[in-house]
Image (cartoon, rainbow, N blue to C red; front, side, top):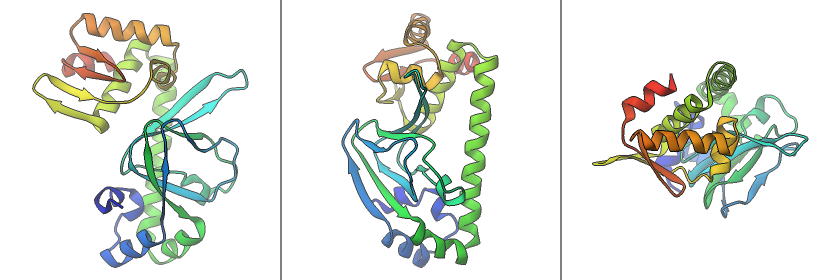
Length: 225
């Protein structure tokens, strides 16, 4: 287990080494191959998860089969915590984007920690509040922003979490297919591809398989506003 990555999760906020170690000991590792489903929308669930390696996506499927990606999560990020505050069916499907390792924690193991460490409960509530804020931003973007603006904003978000600075720009290995990137911004693949091609023709980025290299960060930031 990578302790440094695991302890980036809000779950460990404010815990001393002894409490953090006890919480880690209650967690169980789980590995998934690319494309494997961890749980489906509508499943019962009483566990939360922390990503320690790889990337996982959370998505929903409409009755007509259309898919929408709610989030792409990487090492140190947590999901599934909603079930601790509002028990019920899973609100999304979790699928591995790459080979993934997660650490799971059951409701029974977390409850004593919440009782004795109020700061953990506050950290989880902050996590939920942040997720609600991002949801509000997404709704606003769908109403007020055009597709190229949403694509630029999505790329900048992916760059902030998965980017690596190099001499020729910021390398963003997002590992998403063109269809998944389109689902993330809530648009058709053709429209998203057109926006990416336009950015590339302007010299703002270079397209590579399942990744981009951002060449002009400032211009892309302006387009995202």
